[in-house]
Image: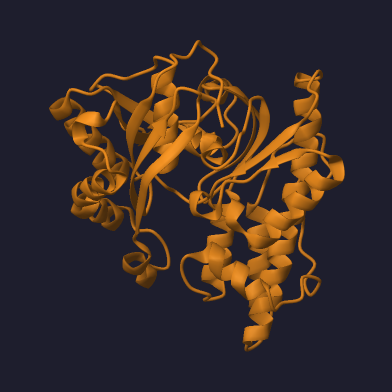
Amino acid sequence: MALTAKSSQVQTVHTVLGLESSCDETAASVVRRNSDGGIDILSSIIASQDEIHRPFGGVVPEIAARAHLDIVDSLTAQAVRESGVEWDDLDAIAATAGPGLIGGVIAGLMTAKGLALALEKPLIAVNHLEGHALSPALASPCPFPYLLLLVSGGHTQLLSVNGLGDYTRLGSTVDDAAGEAFDKTAKIMGLGFPGGPKVDAAAKTGDPKSHKLPKPFAGKDHADFSFAGLKTATARAYAAIENPTDQDRSDVAASFQRTVSDVIIDRCKQAMKLFKSQHPDQSEYRFVVAGGVAANSEIRASLKTWCQDKGYALNFPPLKFCTDNAAMIALAGAERLAAGDIDDLSAKARPRWPLDDKQAADDPKSGSGRKGPKS
């Protein structure tokens, strides 16, 4: 497979070490970008923090940052060892520089800076969202341009991906992200942590028609999302059940999940209209899904059916690359290195870093403040 950068690419082989630490997974990967643009994943390791956060029902930022510090050095060494390359064979060190929990971002980025300095290799500070945006290309060809649904615990956006570093926001959540709504719903019903997979599992034995829940923005002529009201309505539906059983929880989970899926399909349809108007001469329209919520079984099935019905090309990353991982960071780093785009050691860790940076600053969808626009 090959990606086409907006600037001319150097036809050479690039081997890049990537580090990811933006939330509660510490990850390291070595990826090779071949001279024809093809990608080889030489190693990919992810260390989950689920067990240490489980007692709290969610990610505790301070605990997450300490856990990253405890393991990032040994995990990085393991990734290089398993890749079969030597440290000197690396052409660059890439790391997530944001957005994310700032303590974790700093842990990974400072490790990358230390390695870049010691090995005298270029540093590439990667936007975590760009890693997700490019991640389907880890498995199969994904040529530009394409319509991207980026759906995760922290972000729900629809973007026109026109080329490397060239992103136009078509829609974004105005309040909560879809993944956040999944996590809060799981917590309300006591399903456990992490919430998204727990809701998905419970929904398999539930009746999706048992509870009628609102579908925010459904039918509107824009491509924005809203999940706060749906989250509240689900909480009220569950609270109204006296002595809820496992079947009651499954019914609520199924109704919630079906509603989220319906909302996502509705918003994607509107975004595709906007995308087509911006790219009227495409012989084939491509739809790409990335982010942790892309692992949800019902959402995947619904999007696949929609794309098949409309004749859109569909790219999903493999399930192991839907959630946070370092292979996507190494990939983004390799593509940016091929385009001649590197950073110096002054690169900052950023808690907020919209993929459509200028557009978000001019027209923030979900608030802006001292840390910058959220989206």
